[in-house]
Every structure is written in structure tokens, then in C-alpha cells.
Length: 180
Ligand SMILES: *[C@@H]1O[C@H](CO)[C@@H](O)[C@H](O)[C@H]1NC(C)=O
Ligand SMILES: *[C@@H]1O[C@H](CO)[C@@H](O)[C@H](O)[C@H]1NC(C)=O
Ligand SMILES: *[C@@H]1O[C@H](CO)[C@@H](O)[C@H](O)[C@H]1NC(C)=O
Ligand SMILES: *[C@@H]1O[C@H](CO)[C@@H](O)[C@H](O)[C@H]1NC(C)=O
View 1: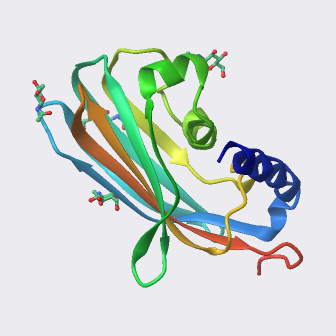
View 2 (view 1 turned 90 degrees about the vertical axis):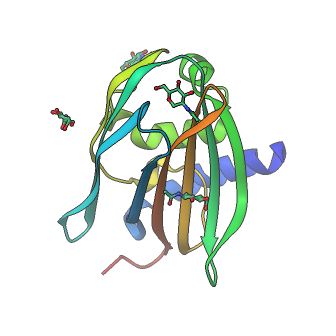
């Protein structure tokens, strides 16, 4: 498991030098709160800003301070419906934000952190914003075969599921042809 991650990591660095030839974009986004007395979504929306760029905007509120936050992550790949695909785990968000201890968490965080206001330590409270967030292949650092994927992030406070942020993404891995 660890070795395959290291191999993937270096392959990712190699592949990321070909970024121009990849498509990596959002196709759908689903947000859902399971406890609106703790987390409310005001906005969760994709917007096509140009032919090649789809941005995601999210505005949510945490209504009481959250000190114990766990993020469960799973990647599914579409083949007659979404099937679990290799990556499945969980991380302690309060610990992660201090020392980035989880390799897959680092990948996800690297993709969105500069578009968000979550770059601070626990507790989390108030507005949680993602603004004009778009996907960049050079930040992915992992080789994904061409396909449609679902990244399901399920957020737990005090060990109880509070909300989901599920991103569907399309990846076209095409080393030697420019996207048209
Ligand atoms: C829902 O949120 C409230 C805080 O507003 C919390 O006290 C309660 O435990 C939460 N319920 C669940 C099932 O998470
Ligand atoms: C987020 O939504 C709240 C409630 O609708 C609103 O007051 C706030 O201005 C919004 N923030 C951003 C950055 O859009
Ligand atoms: C927030 O981001 C800044 C600049 O990117 C960085 O220097 C700082 O360490 C970050 N803080 C946390 C808590 O991650
Ligand atoms: C997010 O994806 C997970 C895993 O497939 C699923 O169980 C959950 O219902 C999804 N949530 C939403 C809001 O679509």
C-alpha cells in the first residue's frame, strides 16, 4: 500500500509535467447537510466560466464551534454506476490541518486550499467558503486513468455525520494529444 503510493507519487510528478494534455474538471457537485442545526449550505454550485473552466462555489455555515471533525473520503469510478475505486479512508481534520499527516488528504487539500478560508486550526465556526475553485491537473499528483470519478467527502462532527460534499469529476488522460 505504502510502496504503491510512493510509486504513484513519482509517476504523478512525471505525468504532471504534461499538464496541458489533460482534462480534469468538475461534472457535478452535491452537497447535503444531515443536521441543519449545526451545518447549513447556502450555496453549492458549479459554473462554467469558459470553455475549459468550470468553477465551484460553496458557502456554508457552521452554527456551533466544531472541535472534533472527521472527514471520510472515498473515490468511486463510474462503470455502470459508481464502484469503489482503491481510495477509501478517513482523517482527523483538526490534526491534519496542523501537520498534513495523511497523503490523500494532502492531495485534496492542495487542490482547494487556496480557494478557501479553512486555512486555520480548530475549532471551525461560521462561514466556510470556497470561491471560484477549479481543478488543476498539476496539483493532483496521482495518475488516474481516463474516466468519471466521484470523490465523496463525508464530514463528521463529534463522530456523527453532519454533511456531505461529493464532487464528480472527469479525467481524460491524454499524454500526446492536445485537448481540442
Ligand atoms: C445536531 O447538531 C446539534 C448542534 O446544533 C448537536 O447538538 C446534535 O448532537 C447534532 N445531532 C446529530 C445527530 O449530529
Ligand atoms: C454566504 O451566505 C450567507 C447567508 O446567505 C450570506 O450572508 C453571506 O454573505 C454569504 N457569503 C459569501 C462569501 O457569499
Ligand atoms: C495558511 O496559509 C499561509 C500561506 O499559504 C501559511 O503560511 C500558513 O502556515 C497557513 N496556516 C495554516 C494554519 O495552515
Ligand atoms: C455522497 O457519496 C456517498 C458515497 O457514494 C453516498 O453514500 C452519499 O449519499 C452521497 N451524498 C450525496 C449528498 O450525494
